[in-house]
Image 1 (cartoon, rainbow, N blue to C red):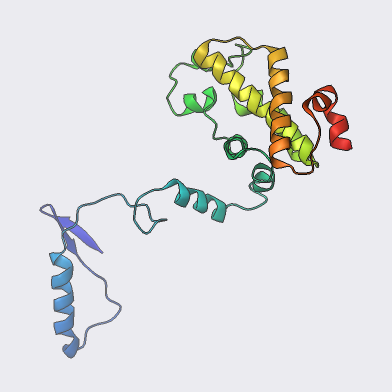
Image 2 (cartoon, rainbow, N blue to C red):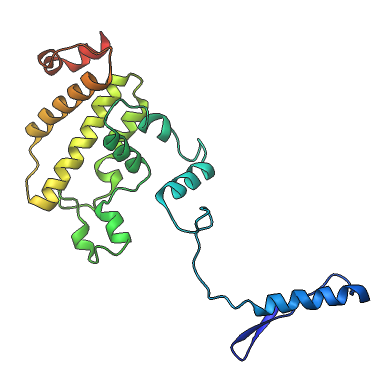
Length: 214
């Protein structure tokens, strides 16, 4: 196809047939145009017409290439739960393995030492999504009713908030406080996003399961 010669690229096309005499002039004009173009190599994002990367184009590419078997229940669960958008995004990132857990930060060399990647709660195992969240996330995908999904989502969200406070503010995990926050968040989300939910906070706090079944 071509080769470098004295710092300049020389094209050497392999034509499928010999040229007719009346075509030689057109071929020479074509070669003059090709040889006159001196371009500098650059990086282009081919999935966007602008050539620049964007989160939207990357997301669309993942969704187009993915399938229901590759991303089981992610769209159906994460985006259909009646919670605030930022919480839906959090759940989606959890399922996609995109949360900035210490395991992910270690893999990206943001954290250099393995000893710095331990779970802030147990200080023993490497902090990963599976270690802290996935047994709850598995229950989330099995939950049929919206109320159950919201409860599981509130648990995940509160654990993540508690984790961040532990890492960045040095707070210790308080199980009772975590439970209270889970109850409060789940009730406020159901009240705001589910028109069929009409229970008071005291009723919800006393027996969330009964409110869901009723």
